[in-house]
Image 1 (spheres, rainbow over the protein chains, first blue to last red):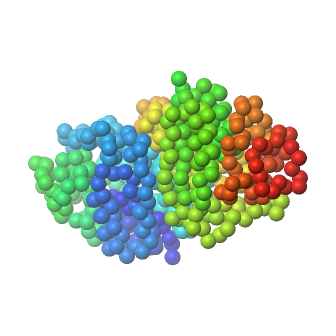
Image 2 (spheres, rainbow over the protein chains, first blue to last red; image 1 turned 120 degrees about the vertical axis):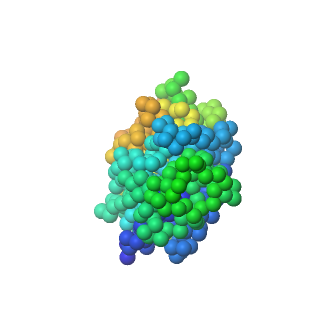
Length: 234
Length: 234
């Protein structure tokens, strides 16, 4: 059976990616990061999704990116998280929630994990469509990481490659949600909101991108929100 | 003043690289890793070298690669570290001390650090000459990482690049030692041995490569050894 690592944050995109990977016949090991986020709501979601997919091998990897600073998403940040004035403003500039080096670090650790598990692939839910303009989500970035991975491991010296799989990279949020719905992804157990309160805020960039996706796909988001934007009619 | 990150393990190569970087006019921030090694002798050396170079900004980054396993160098390993029968056997196969993904992870975290410090370069002491055959020390690997770094950061989106500097990559160990001696690197404060005992063992792969370098450069190694190989006459 083919083996793969799934980078599972507990957000909507990584959860849909996990369901796609399993649907495609991969036996999955999951990797989630405690990297100095302000809350652990996503991690709770990651645990739930992994358990629903019967993933036995789930590593929660700790590393503290907040000691470098540079992002409003990290604990002890001097900046607070900005919310976009309007959903159409998203992606025009790199927002303060960008965490320097995050995807590169996560993919590198996934590569180490993949090598020790003798995995054939790493699945990641990065998308370059309805996204925040982070540089490390672009297709050319993923291509460069693949080229690095082809040289970086003992496995590749012996002739085997670890494939970086990004099934969502060219999909917009509505398409991701439609795909997820077909695979019965339990959206109510995925967490996208930058805040760690009981209900999702409905106003941060990540909530707005998510709600816009549900709105456009005409699928209702089962998650509970504090405030829904006026334009949201799924 | 130009700024750079130095990946400082406390070994001979990274210490010489730190002296080269400072000699070349860079203001340095140092990055050392507690990654699940069996001992902290190298880290003590890294502290000493950073202090001798008056580096104020020194981050000790914790992450536990031993949870993945796959290397005799990590704590809780089921394998013990093999020693080569002869120094000429080194590099013929990838040894059990290889840590999957290590350089990729370290460079990725250095990239994040460099971005938050607005650094121009990352210095690393990797060498592809007298080395253990690890895949992530080869020049083509470093080239691939540079291409990734050129796409990975906010800094690169704005047009600035973070340069990966590998001044030792084409030098053999004797040449590294000769260069270090010219820059007055305090070799007695650098640690190469895979064991964490009071004196270096003189027999592991890392000790043998180091001693061969001192032997060939006709410079005496000031470090104390338990047993010196018969062929060692500096």
